[in-house]
Image (cartoon, rainbow, N blue to C red; front, side, top):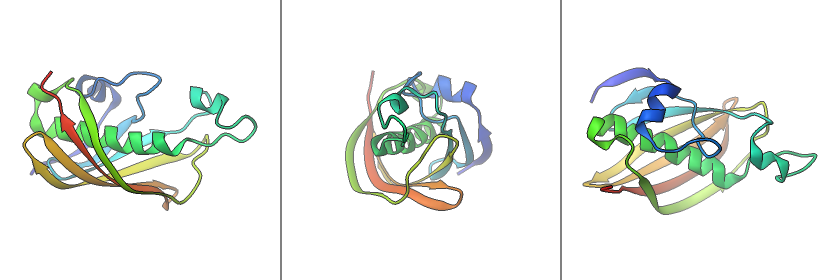
Length: 149
């Protein structure tokens, strides 16, 4: 398929329905339509989950790292399918083999590598890996379904 360099935040906002405080991807890079993309998430101290996770030792919850991978994948799916898919909800169906290898803290930049492993109709499966400074922070396999409305 076609590759594109960058999908910026303004375009992401038209592609997926997530908004603050749950929008967890700032930009997509190295997009290969129908295949793979790298999402960028700049982790900042002012995100609401850091108030309670954990006071005095802020750590990004692992479930939010997986959600950031899924949002990267959802934007890739919409970019692949085109305008008719914009704004549709994409629901998790499976999360498998999730592993957390390194803490993610304010000031880190997550690079969210997602690779399609299978796509059939409305169901897409991905392998995701999240890196900070070249070190693997988390990984998971996940599946999602695009809702009709």
